[in-house]
Amino acid sequence: MTDVQTAPQSDHYIGRFAPSPTGPLHAGSLVAALASYLDAKVHRGAWLVRIEDVDEERSATGVGEGMLALLQTLGMQWDGEVLWQSRRKEAYQAAFDALAGHTYPCGCNRREILDSRLGIAPDGAAIYPGTCRHGLAPGKTMRSLRVRVPDAEGQADRVGFTDRMAGPMVQHLATQSGDFVLKRADGFWAYQLAVVVDDAAQGVTDVVRGADLIDSTPRQIYLQQLLCVPTPRYLHVPVVRNANGEKLSKQTGAAAIAPGSEREAVAALLRSAAFLGLPLTRADSLAGFWHAAPDAWSELLRLRGAA
Image (cartoon, rainbow, N blue to C red):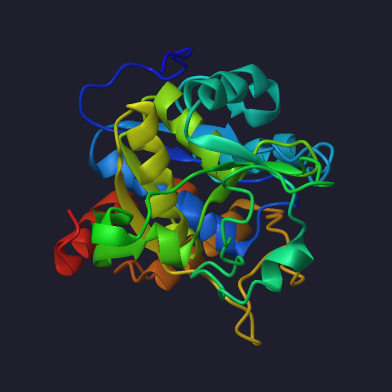
């Protein structure tokens, strides 16, 4: 697969932070940003920022720009130019075209998939039963586009990787995912395709993100294999949850991070560092925090065997 190269050149490490602008940055997203930023710094690599606004209907106006401004306020400066997914539809179409022979149109709606009773995938999505694998049924029209995963016989559908924190992970795509969506019924390209295309285009070597996405990784690796692009290393960090055990998000009422002073900015960073388990308890300034934080992250990696 060929695509534009948007990353600064690095022969050893390129990481990224890729938030979705459905709402302002909150404590959960700051944890992911801090972990990815520090991992890039301790490996003397590049840190890219990508705004994942491929779902334009859910992306709020001005939120992406606000995220970038907040990162700079907190002292987190990215390398290169910011990539916006909403401007890359041609790249996703080209990748889909390259998958010819592995994809097919699907006419099933959500209720029909849920009624198949195959169960729920690890990430909460309904497992697709392959209803349209051999063509649309009479009277059906295309709603989405799916990629065909290998059949379960002989474990051909087995995709594994080693997470730097969690260790070896394995998923059987046929029974734990089913053929998954590449283009949604609303016409937007799906996250799984967009993230693979963009990581390859930007030359990303290391993905550091929240553990809520760990179950998506095997599907992304499968697409990487089909598209003949490199597979990055992965490190998934714990997800911040509210008092009800729900992942912090706009939908669960997560409060936006809006520091009004340097002291508040440092406090927000220290809370994120504490959640990650960094041996860093205090800092008197942003400069002081960023002086101490990389060593603290290095120590955490050493203790977790995740270097």
